[in-house]
Length: 308
Image 1: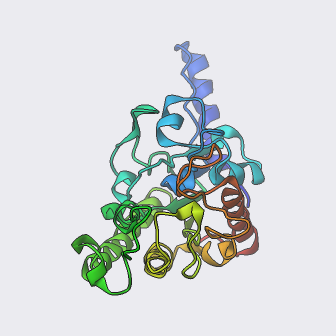
Image 2: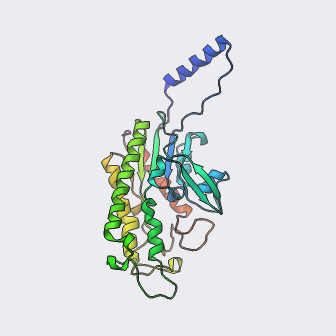
Image 3: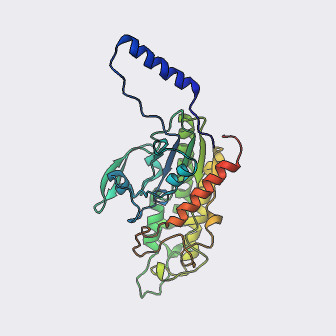
């Protein structure tokens, strides 16, 4: 992928410096160059992990890893650190593309993260977007509502909506997914308006659960619940996000097939279970998944044709 600065901008800059010298004006402070790559995303993009969290308060509050896929993609493309603006942040919803987010917790401290569209400008050449799983508390409400006590044999969250609370009824879930599609369309259009030249890649979510498999890593969830949880958190959520990309002619990076075989309870999972692990927060991706996303993005950039 070529990252170029337009010659016309260089000429304008030279002219400004020359006029400043002639007039004897005070030296101007150099403007911060617009980032060439801006990443938008939630915690599945920021990759919260105690072992790799960044040093700044913003990075700690957002759970932003020093080895998440935006940083790996930027390195693969040969971009300087200043050429990347990593806006990914744990807990982010699609609305946080347009408004500041109060990120963090009592453990990490808090930070007012800028709207995630911040930084996209005329010189931006790449934008990645992975948002929607937190909208309407979709992800958290499913994990909370479908968990059961250790010795309970009762199943929750089966295909029969009577086994689920009202907020997870068929109609309620369908409405949330439709809003996720519409919200992502709005984000894509806003990014394209800010940088018509940019490649915009919408990144899907990985496969989290496999079949009806359960194990010690996800002991609060019964096997009867897994198929429905998977259908929403992987298949239908990704369909909603992909539809937004299709409707706006953005590119879609499908992580579902790539991550098959690495679900929870597999021999080599890319997702942490409900236990503490310094490499990943509970029910969040391990570094291996972040590397796979970075590889999929760079492959898409190098294999596809001209920018949209």
